[in-house]
Image 1: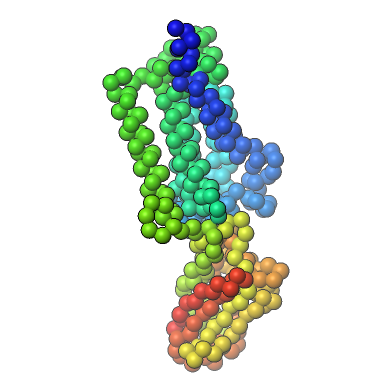
Image 2: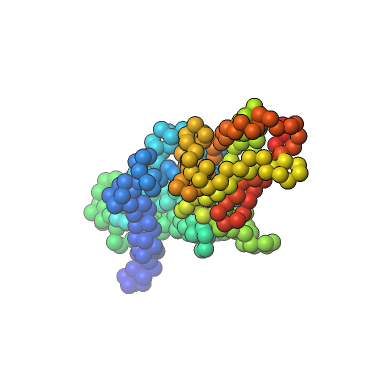
Length: 338
């Protein structure tokens, strides 16, 4: 009978899942604090810039992300807190301490990843897979708790007083206090909800159920708005909403074209590489800036660009086309009335 019980110990059977999911979250803390300093806003690889990449196509939480990336100090506090929470959740899950409470943390963290960055992934829909699997794992660990190889189990076996509290079964491990008649319904409803989230986000982010498959992490896309010509200054907002997150879009040309398709002004690679902070006013943490041979536009970055050119003051009234060209040959246009 003992062998049958141990073989049906769900907490024990979920050990591999618990250890792996625990490490995936604790390793985020380890990478950002021990292996590299990714919490320094001035250092390359700052986690806040990665967070900024989520902004363009986040689902349901875009206003929160936008508020944070517009306020660097508040963003930094949240990135530090987020990293500490990931470290605690991951470590406690690995050791099986307060497993059910930490599983709620896993569920919440994974939900944030799914809604924020589920649309990112150049080849394998990486962030979406991490998000949906994390949500499912958090739910399973809440149901199973930890088994034989866990601190929860050690505390229960040694009759520590806290394990006798009613709340311990909800936040730690052991038999979950849900009536047997109700328990299967809880499992079914929770599982269907997670399946629904999986299918819904797969369709919204990637068209994975019907229609045309799409991946917004492959080709760069710039949105141009607020174009104006005043006196000798051309101003416009540019926002990169799609493309690979690990490197920027390289803008190699900015042109203003009249209705007869004549180029009024043109900024080439050399001109763009010499733009300074007076020409570029960034809105967010991820910054558009001049590079060695182009204007670099990271994913999620948005800025107001000001270009001064005396020839603009002599332009006739009419409609002009602003054209921005990426190094790949892709270009975007925006109509401006003078």
